[in-house]
Image 1 (tube, rainbow, N blue to C red):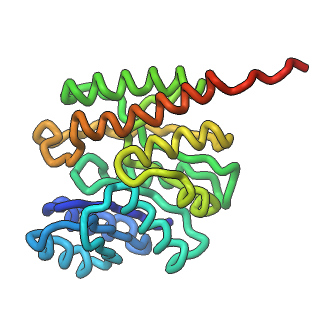
Image 2 (spheres, one colour):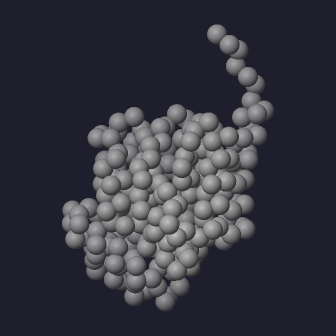
Image 3 (spheres, rainbow, N blue to C red):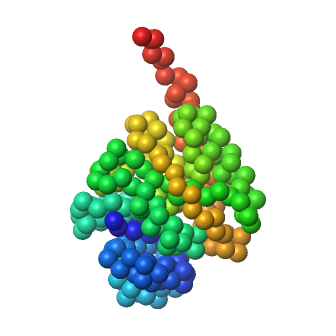
Length: 238
């Protein structure tokens, strides 16, 4: 297994995460992809290197989807034959949950299932996150027929056999992770879900998700998918 962490302007929580991963799973490589952070982030990224992380850097901000694809390409070259667990470095994902999601992947290539670490959204959760995930989940089920409790989770495990498929999924920014779920539903890749802790620090103040712009990027693929399904010719009954 490889842990892939896309970051932008990361803080101290990034080296904290790498240190905790090293203590809990010392043999698990960590790949950090920095998406064009400012020089102010250099000390944090240097600390990640000292903790054993492979740190890759974009010269400018290109979006989370592009950062994830850079990481997938690196894993395919440097660590062929390994599954990938993606996690965020903003403090939402605990090491115990990262490892729990990794263990939920079937051995070998299995059936090509994707595993999501889904939150229950109980306790102290920002209202925009609670409502946003609820609405998105309803729209996703309506568009695909697949029930996903937490479509916006960044904690996901992908089997090694899906790396080429992941690189072919369109999207450069936050819409990429929604496109992965839509394409999985279209292409028949199962989506499994395992419950993880719901953690928000300082009302999720460290998030770089833009409420209007990035929400539009997420909902547009959903609407396009639903429209294409409605316009597709119905299959004759057997």
